[in-house]
Image 1 (cartoon, rainbow, N blue to C red):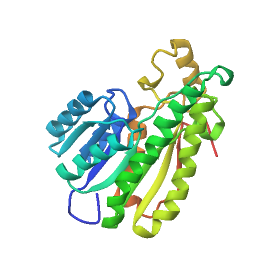
Image 2: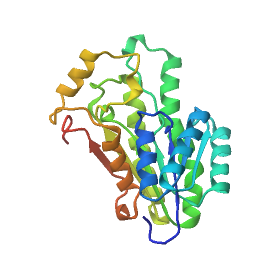
Image 3: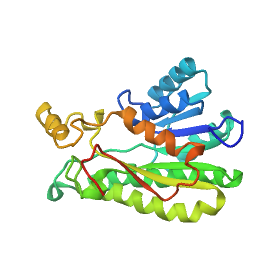
Length: 255
């Protein structure tokens, strides 16, 4: 997993939802031998998920409630992780929300909410976690963007979501340049349509079928598909990759 024999901790945000990418990523990382810290707005669900990983994979795991848009909340969560788990070597910024609202129906409150959870949350969590990585001279940071940032929407999320996810791409590239000399890599993942609960309440079977039909591989992605890519980019083997954007969309958007 790393260039040392010391176990490291991977912090995964937004990993409490049972059918989410974050949960699948936390599970994959635990199976790979990482200690895992789950950070989610739902603290009880995060704690339950961490307990499940510890029991199944025999790794140290901690689940904490935190609001990624609040600096003090993020600081408190990471402080506990640093005190109770092995050194943090990986960060998966997965917490996020979508927004299918047409542009002229959006409000400033909706814009701010989507930007805060997706972009500001990534900024605050990264800033707090990366300080320790830089001090130790090792770290892997992987940020969740979206194909919507590349296509200008056209999947499910519209303007606020696409803008927030595009901000994450710029953040990733600039931070990769700045942290490269310290031994910390920073990359982004841009999934296409994935079968998770993020669209619950705002979709229907006909729309879900159309989303799958628009993918050359003929299906939506699974959380496990995306988790495998996160696991690779967080691994020691990805040590010469930084500032990259990894498309994983079944061919729905080909650069």
